[in-house]
Length: 37
Image (cartoon, rainbow, N blue to C red; front, top):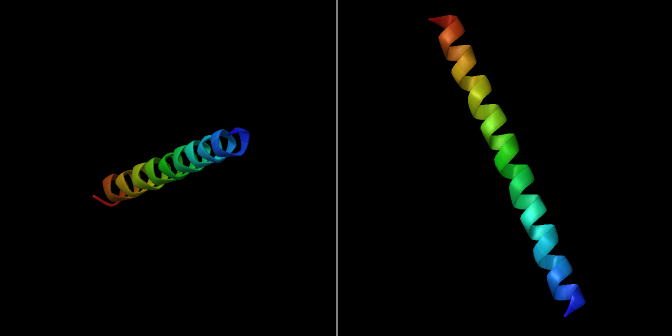
């Protein structure tokens, strides 16, 4: 039971990390487009 909860905790942190990286890349793309135009 402890291993299962640890696995879900790790999965949650991993998804959160990916979403933060995706939002950061998306904001960079938007800034580059606004800078070019």
